[in-house]
Image (cartoon, rainbow, N blue to C red; front, top):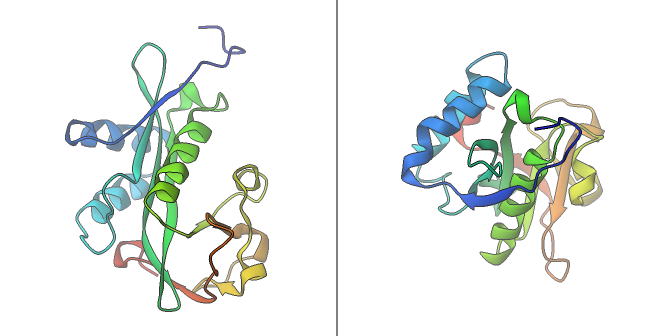
Length: 174
């Protein structure tokens, strides 16, 4: 495929047969196995893992190219979701696979009645999905990070957004 072409990505939730492929996507996308191991640790944590919130982007030929995961976290005592890891195989990067997987995961979360998603990530990338600095909601991470990298997205503007410190699942190690 011509690298300047933007394929049309199909998205779908993870199925039982995708576990090895998801690990492969994360191993290919990152310099260490940390993110791949994190996905497996989150999958093994029934308090963190939420069915239907692990999403894949599939290339027109059927190759699994991108991945996005939402897991349960808390802001103060209120349930929220943490976005990440998000990963794209290097040969598919910068062509929309990651965005497609993230948009599908966020849509599924909204459909499941979730209200708040937090992400620690690139300040230039995540605003395209509606993320803004979490501090604007009074949300703080449990570690020091520059304000612009800790972002939040309210999925339902009619519902109140909790404030407080983010409590991540144990697998995140924070």
